[in-house]
Length: 157
Image (tube, rainbow, N blue to C red):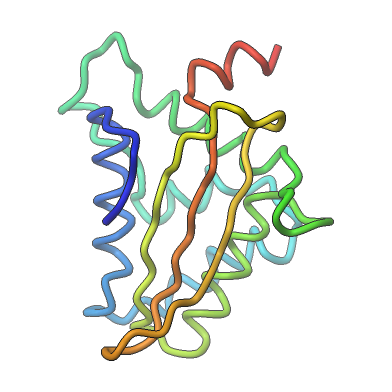
């Protein structure tokens, strides 16, 4: 697991994502959910996260931070914004395509998620999906270069 954000909600969701795709459990059944993003050009990231129980644990969080609300709004940003690193696709579409491709090759494919703050970005978010070959097998690294959530909210309006 790697990330630079360290809010409790971010740590919680990155931990859940990396645990789900740790390569130990077959996740071929997830393909149908991720295809909703990959084939429909976005607009479904929030639904996929909910269907796969990939949401922050509100019970561990301060009520003031509203992690599930913030998480859902951030997922909406994935659906709304073009990906500078994958021209012609929304950010959520890039992620959906990469996950579907990986799980189609091997339903125990290891996928690692990273959140990297991009405070100098002129856009809201971009996503890079790169496969790295290591001795134990390939790993799909999904890196979201994103502004902090409060900056997203301020610039979205």
